[in-house]
Amino acid sequence: MCLVVVLAVACERENAREDAQESAREEVRSAPEVASGAGARPPSEGSLEDDVERPPAFAHAPAEGPTDVPTTEAPGTPQCRVPALPIPRPRECERGEDYPTCKWQMPAAPLAEGRYRRWRNTIVEHWWARPSLVSFLLASADEYRRLHPDQVLAIGDLDAPGPRHRTHDRGVDVDLYLLGALMTENAGGGRYPSNYEGKDEAEVEALRGRVLDLAKVLARCSNGAIRIYYNDPPVLERFLAWYGAQGFPPSPFDAPMQAHNSLHDFHFHVTIADELPVLPGDPLPEGLSHPIARIEPPPPPESAPHLSSRNRRPGEWAAVPRE
Ligand SMILES: [Zn+2]
Image (cartoon, protein in one colour):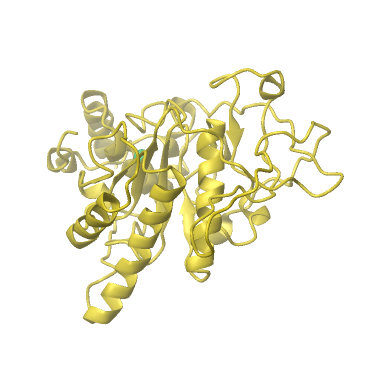
């Protein structure tokens, strides 16, 4: 194990690649023998049941953020409105400052009434980002739940700068997981079983439909200014055809969906445009306001081995194509 750790650390320094590291971190957190090392947090054993979060910190901040803008969309068209959930933010936001001194945090999953869960390897310190990204995720998760109320959408890292990602440092990136529906599952411990193998065509198509619907919702709620990394060729082809027919305004991205390295078999890496506005939303119930909270700094990688890529098997690095 030690040799593997040393080699992996060496490789990490030479290979500052976004999602390879992200995956490695996921593996580490799924491997108790590594995660229980000195300085590590208790290992998170991967089930969504350990999505235990702090209680809502309702404070006495003015209820700002999503504005109550009426929509005139036809029924059935995604409205992409931010649901009335308490969204933590620091005082800097109330003072009118911009990202990065002002960030919003995803509301704790137990408050989201089934719209989303927190990905098992994501810590709350990595759930902060630009207000626009948080509003986009909340609105998208709300829309998606309407389409597939039984589908678990897990939201992974938002801003998580450091050795684990090459991006996720500008408030515009997020990793999304549709449990059981994407090509493969990151089951932890380096296991990535297929979600499609052994299923008949109709079942696979039904799963692909769920994936495609998520991509469409994301595109709708960003007005087309989005880039998703995901590898399934039929989904890519269908999504691009659909996207092309929508008449979205010009996007800052080359393509709204692109294949990337094999880690994007089991999650969407989503990037929104810097310019995406905060989406409109519903006001909080009478008497409630958005909690004021300090942006929690993530633990330094050296003090939290489960958050870095120290157990990546060196041979795997070569298999991950550069971006
Ligand atoms: Zn990512």
